[in-house]
Length: 212
Image 1 (cartoon, rainbow, N blue to C red):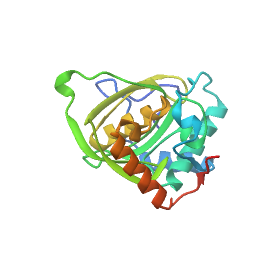
Image 2 (image 1 turned 180 degrees about the vertical axis):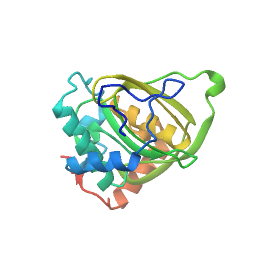
Image 3 (image 1 turned 60 degrees about the vertical axis):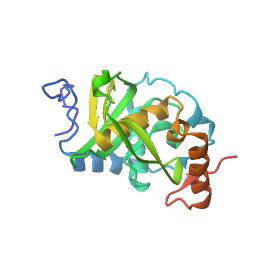
Image 4 (image 1 turned 90 degrees about the vertical axis):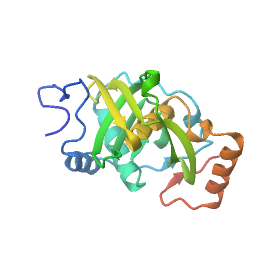
């Protein structure tokens, strides 16, 4: 059973969060089978450095974009992908990501907004982070180990998604993308310079869009 039921009802848990841990393999494969992989935009491309437009049309064109995003994410071996990472100026991201307990989460969020956490819930996890748009580079970045994102699904229904550990990092990372921020923008100047050096010295394992 997919996240979106045939009658338009969304599966949610007892706390009102979308259920994104069921039938992950089947749902991801179905998205990917309908999609076409696109090359990844990299740091320096203007679409990555500005806030994206809100999704206002929940139509077949959006559905095709989501399919293409899952195909692109899989080919690049990523766990999350924002629309501007394949050059599309829209607030939508997809994910297929495990949490720190090894539980797989698969889904789509349109027009995401990170909810503010109470101070007692802001436990920072200082772990390595990478990005498909900064290929071959990694840096340590502290982020809260719990995150809640609210937004809409592919049909425009309101949803809330929660994540812990690695998945919480993914939710924050992808939401950042859609507001024009890369993870390297949260680093010190020295750390950012080092990440860009790693990128310059490395060779991406997937197709990228050359910057003019």
